[in-house]
Figure (cartoon, helix red, strand yellow):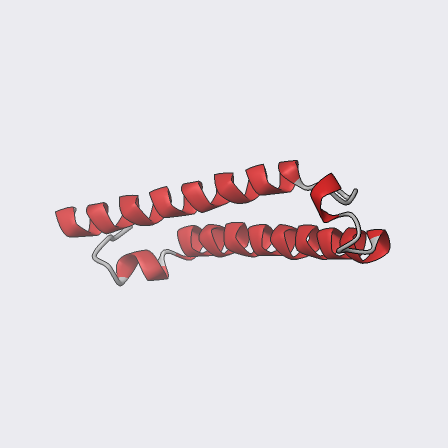
Amino acid sequence: MNIYAVIILVALLVDFILKLSGNLLNLKALKLDVPPDLVGIYKPEEYRKSQQYLRATTNFSLVKAVSHWQSCWLSGSPMGSIGLTR
């Protein structure tokens, strides 16, 4: 197996895991209530809608990223382009 392909694959997997864990932690920290420092700046309904939108787009990006990695892994074609063979 090509050592450069392994290094690139590991780097991509580490990047994916770091982004995934960051997104999951951000989702866990989302609150629908306006923080005390922002009361008067945001209307409660607008803030709640923005948090719901952020949650929905983050969830969609997570599903998209996982399905992309899954399809790449199962098809093998992107892996073959960097020197890995089945």
